[in-house]
Image 1 (tube, rainbow, N blue to C red):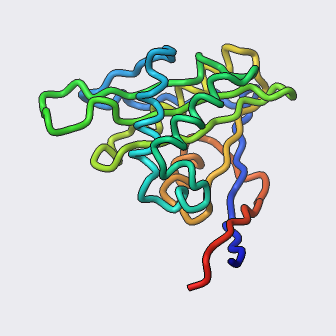
Image 2: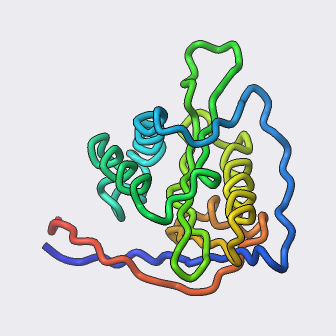
Length: 186
């Protein structure tokens, strides 16, 4: 075994100095507020969103249905879990071949009054429709309503589309961190 390091950016949004951006509501989608009955659906969307992406190498649980379910249960059971910053996008159009649940986001409040965005994921085939932006904006509104000062997230640096999205929404890169991942020799 060897170790590979993945560069990740910690990005922050100042909820006191910046207004929450407005983004258009994507056509044919509705947004579902947190409901415990949707926990398994959040996990399924998370797995479908990340299973063939780099983040499932960096965080192996994201590529595994059981791992995603366990992660979702852990997030929802934390004392800082914020239902108001946890959302799912549902497709309500007329194409029965598309998945109903299409994107997910979860939010936590840290001890130092920072909102922590967890796992923004959109299933393949539903990307580039504005779902991630709409979910992030809803999470920011949830953090603001909870009286938090800042919102933060981490993103793998190679995920340039996500980095650009977060910058466009007003997040700023504040730190670079590295995640060590054990890999088999090849």
